[in-house]
Figure 1 (tube, rainbow, N blue to C red):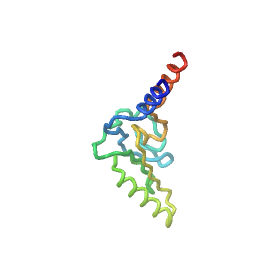
Figure 2 (tube, rainbow, N blue to C red):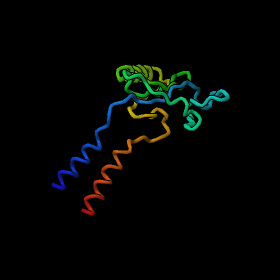
Figure 3 (cartoon, one colour):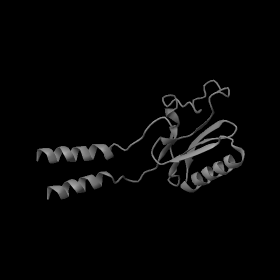
Figure 4 (cartoon, rainbow, N blue to C red):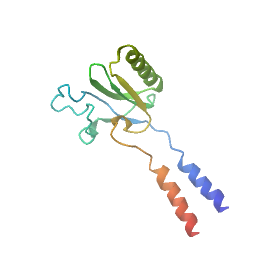
Length: 138
């Protein structure tokens, strides 16, 4: 009975409720190309300076996107999975022929397009730890 309860708690901790993803939304220049004064969205990303740009995406946008173009412009925004895959595919194709250094990355957790922070839902860690502690003392 106790093992079944512990298993249920662990499984339930991995289920997250559905809500819109929050992504950084901004455009900036990469480092070394004359970063504009006050530009906080470049490839050297100051997560403390751009907290106001963490934006809740529309429900249709389920991914955060970070793109670095051939012209050394960094773009961070909300996108659908299909558009992220398209952007990544186009960048891969362009780089195959021209080696521009353009990159596109898609991710699915809040703020993950900062490329400076590891994001993890706290319940993934806390609930299993509480279940283990409970099993140790009961």
